[in-house]
Image (tube, rainbow, N blue to C red; front, side, top):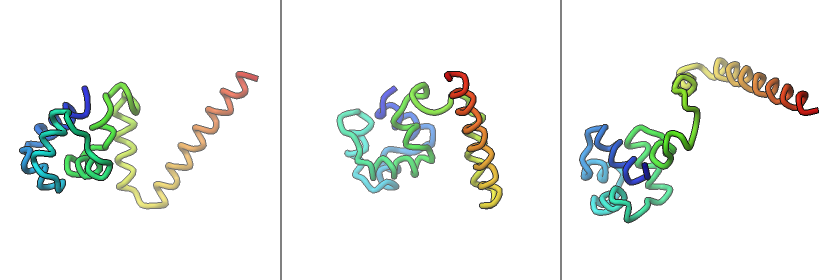
Length: 113
C-alpha cells in the first residue's frame, strides 16, 4: 500500500472528510485530494501535520507494515505507555533496555571471535 492509500484509509478510519482533514492540517482540500490520488506528495511539514491530525506516526502513513518497526504490537504498545511514567521511571527503563542491548551485542561479538 502506498502513501496515498494509507492516507485515505486512515482518514476514513478516523471518520474525517477530506475537507475536515484539510482544514485541520491547513492545506486546501484540492491539495489533500491530490495526496490521496497519488498525484502529489506532501512536504515534510505537511506530512508531520497529517500524522498529528490523524494521531498516527509518519511511518504509518509512509511505510507498509512489513517495511518498518517490530511486527509484534506488544513492544510498540509498551513503548507508547512509557510516556505515562515520570522522568526517573523512564530513565530506569531506558537504562534496562540499553543494558540488554549492550549484553546482546557483546554476546554476538564474542561468538564471532
